[in-house]
Image (tube, rainbow over all chains, first blue to last red; front, side, top):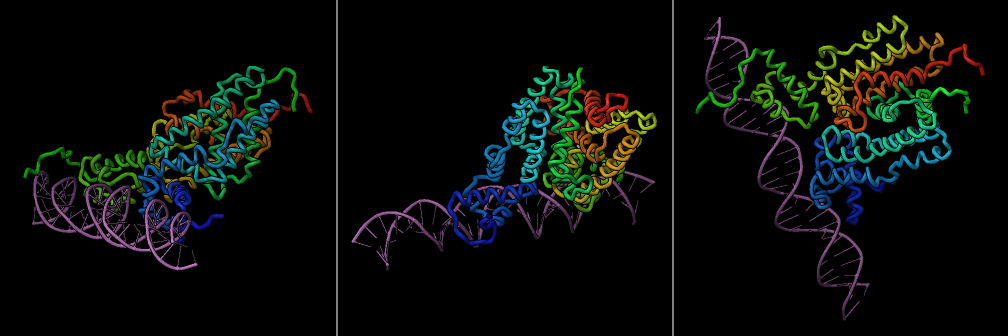
Length: 220
Length: 220
DNA sequence: CGGCTCAAAGTAAGTACTTACTTACCAGCT
DNA sequence: AGCTGGTAAGTAAGTACTTACTTTGAGCCG
């Protein structure tokens, strides 16, 4: 499906070339960071001269920004947590809510490991765009999921605890698992389970951990 | 030509200067990564000329390796999980075991935030020393804590589940919380709690999530 | 169809500056 | 003297970014 991301002299239309350079740069930046990637390397990987990179992106910074922007905002299926959990919420099925979110995040990270690396690099290098992503996306998840938890607490389903703590626990399990899978232990030596199993176990433990002791025990 | 002007620092003994350069480099590398930190910056921060850096460390790589080595192996109080949990294990107090580990890790990361950043940078840059640390330290925690969980399962205290999953959940909560505190949300806008409270809540949720239903309750 | 135009796609070879690392030389001790 | 802590001033190889130039191909005209 990839036409050719390398040594072809084929002439491309402007927008096509722009997207190709962007795609190539994603992989390089995610593997070596901003400072660790040279414009020369990007050009070579795209099969064009350095000058072409600078025709499409005024500066290296602008290319980097375009990537983060592209990935975070309109990056294909951009992981909508609200949609993912909607079905479970309608059915008041806590397990479905958390499991769908966990599985969604895990498979998303598995299919696009570059994204997590890109974000980490960018956060470590204190790039403002990482902060922007965090402020926009992560805050949204905390508010959305926290709101759901608060509602279920009012209904007496969950124990009394700051919903933000529960969200942090849950996101912690999921993100840490992804981080292990594609950064620290890619060969899965410490733990090798499918995303489905992981999502199910994380959900099981969390829900069991925050479910209120019901006066008349009814299990579904 | 005045050879005695400028802010020439006090003359130091060799080993003393070496340690000072190392300390200064830790802070720079942890903030800007390996490629993002120049030897000139390190020298300036240490108050000596670049040549002095290269007298103590043959290459920039060697300096970096010395840092990771220093931090990971004999870095002051190097966080011994076995010791930390020993008291709880003797008392068969699950809560004490997990809470001590969580609090230990959280305060360790709080007092030495450079370490986590250094490790992340090093893992992203695929430095072999990060892998070494992971293989040695993290594997040890999985084996140690996993062994404890397995034992408590045999005693009927915990539900039947792969101990590695439980360890991953627990470490996930703790590490993700640290990562939030010193990388993504240092101003604690999403969640602002003390390390003690965090450790307690993480432990509560995890233990509640994996505790076996006591046999004297209603059978099903 | 062939030949012409002209902007866009493309390049080779710079520029000004930074980088890791070196060399040659001081100065203050015992 | 001789050894040690220290420096100023290099060097060769990058670095991001530019300039001045060449190639390509679609569209229009006869």
